[in-house]
Length: 501
Image 1 (cartoon, rainbow, N blue to C red):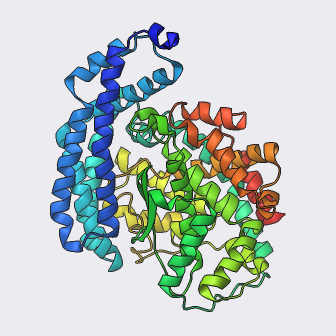
Image 2 (cartoon, rainbow, N blue to C red):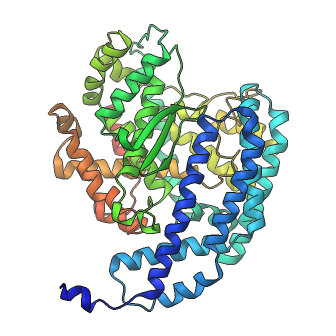
């Protein structure tokens, strides 16, 4: 008999909590699949009743997270003899309980129903450039988001926008972001101009479309396999907005295809595969528990951007992509042409299609808009003019009248996710920082790919990021992985190396 097991002190309150949060996880499992189904499979006419069903499910999950006995169990568990990992799990339980109890169930239900209604309408309204039709839906969503922000802010004694940031990036504040993004603004505009000047005389790749969607899908799946995606626990589908959803044992990723240009769909798949590898690599012993979840949206984005930018745009990766393109699309492109294509800097309208140099400008715009939405200084009516002004200032692009490719292009506000966008640029910063730390241990990524050692890159990510789940705070995770807290200068160094040599 194991003596160590006999001497373990009982933890009855903690054990009750783990059983309760496992139950919550089961309901969230089907909520995640419902979200995927709406985006990828559900017919348009199913939206209204699906919204009611998902709102009811959200209310039930909220009631489980705010169950009266949880407060006492959390307090009692904190006095029990827990291991460091159990203490981390308890910390995350307390965080989830706090987040849930701050918001009334009626508001959760109203937000969920309105988000489904707005998203369902957005799919057609965006396609038709119908700003006037979309505007009332967005007003309702923003109004509920502002109400939620105020409730959370009053309870936590922080600013309303900080309260929304905390949902996606625990511990992040507006002040920290303004400092970090302020540093970004000191070097990014000049870098964009320097790169544009350098690339002005470089030839552009002619893609010679069309490319059959079925062939693009096969190419995408081949790339996913090369990146180590586990098809026994996931799949690839089509949606109007690429995303990664589902659960770690059943990851659903989507992309969108353009018959004239295969390149954006492939890198979209590479990006979402980064999300998926993170989900599939989360610690199995902690599945169903808060400590087993992804750390934050910024960390999640760091894994997708590591895959897309640190790997996907690397010349060595493109040398591996070249024969796959030949096999599936029957097109011959040199690795040099592919490298020029995937590192072409071209200020454009669409965030998800933006190159990595200009991409942060899209986030700076949304960050300013979200803050203004929440403090009331920007109304939905004035959003198109604000958008056009910011795009002109940041990227020199006029978006007047182009709602579909302007302020209606993203799904996030349609579903009420304010406070999410900063995670994208934080993710780019974390990804660059991780790359430099990895290369200090393993050598240049380009050499690893060329030598058939890509698995070593994923082993490093698995060991330092994926397997940690939420057992560490974000700051602890980044410090342990890289040796220091978030440092935006690694992103600057990465972009200068790649684009200016």
